[in-house]
Structures are given as structure tokens and as C-alpha cells.
Image (cartoon, rainbow, N blue to C red):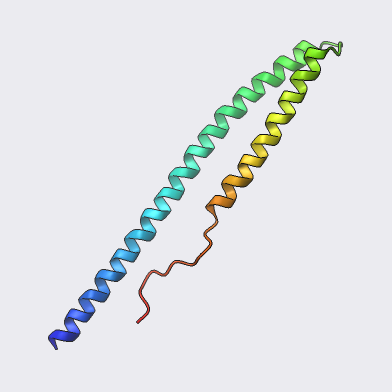
Length: 103
């Protein structure tokens, strides 16, 4: 009887440990998501300021400075898209986590 009780306690401890690991992992993912969203919001705010500057700077003339600004703007948007792709791919879990041990 004591042996079965000890085995059940051990299984309960293992299950609680696995649950704590999953909970910690989910909290890390949530914090990473929120920090990336905040960073992306700041960068897109800076970008919107830059595009308004480009629009007022063009004013009907196409100079080398305007072309460089447009290239930098489009290039930075492409870099944002690439970094967003890498970020989303890092959040995919490659293996399935088990909450309880297999007996």
C-alpha cells in the first residue's frame, strides 16, 4: 500500500513539474510576443513619420535624395517583413510537449 502511495506521489510530482514547465514556456512566449509587438509599433511609427517627410519632400520633383529615401523606406519595410517571418517561425513549437508522463 505504501509503495503504491509513493508511486502516485511521484507521478503527481512529475505531472506538476511538467505543468510548471509548460506554464513557464507559455509565459516566455507571451512576453516575447508583447515585446516584439511594442518594438514593431515603435518602428512603424518612425516609418510613418518618414513617409510623411518623403511625401512633403517630393513636392513634384524627383531628385536623387527622394529616390534614396524611397529605396530606404521600401528596404526597411522588406526587412520588417523578413524579421517578422523569422519571429513567427521561432514561435512554432517543433515537438509536442507532454503534460503528464507516460507510464
